[in-house]
Amino acid sequence: MEIFWRAMEQINWYTGLSPTAFFTILASMIFVFQMVSSMFVSPEEFNKPPTVPVSSSNSANSNLFVDDSVADASQSVQVGRLTEQQLRAYDGSDPNKPLLMAIKGQIYDVSSGRTFYGPGSPYSMFVGKDASRALALLSFKPEDINGNLEDLNEEELVILQDWEYKFMEKYVKVGELVSEEALNERSENGHQSTDTNREEEPNKDQ
Image 1 (cartoon, rainbow, N blue to C red):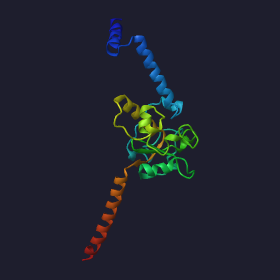
Image 2: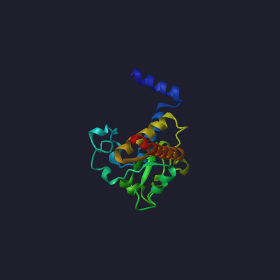
Image 3: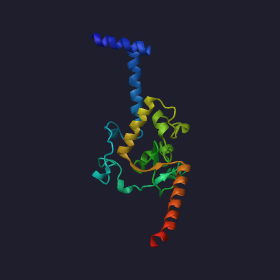
Image 4: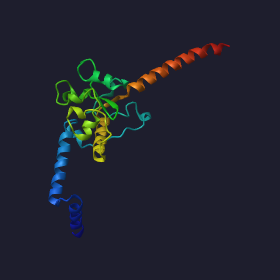
């Protein structure tokens, strides 16, 4: 009992709140977080512990999902490296393209959640973009739908990490975001490598 009262005193000392007010606010925050979380993944998926990907040598789909209720990897097409501008083409405006969404630079195919992310749905605003900041802040503001993590605090980063685990478990990773500069540099290096190989080919015959 003495430990309990000491804990109550510490709460009052560090927060300036009465124990009743502190736990009321804490319960409210947990409720809001779970309510917003349920908007992105189904309720039965929300409370499942995250499944961290294992080595790809164990299974062809080892970095995907664990049961029949999640996306079928065979239905997803790997897009490789995309810039933010290229990712916008997968926002659902073209019915022949998958619905793609990025978290922390990793692109996921959310087509299996078309009810939530398809055109006209409440969360279609996140598709075709890196929504890392919005997820970390539990925000629906257009200005927060981007990949900027610079000024997020530790708690917000933990929330984002939880979202990343949920997407790793439920949706198929199909690519990654890169800057225009990185994409151009990679393309230039590829051309240089090809040119070098062509120059060396005659020397092999000598």
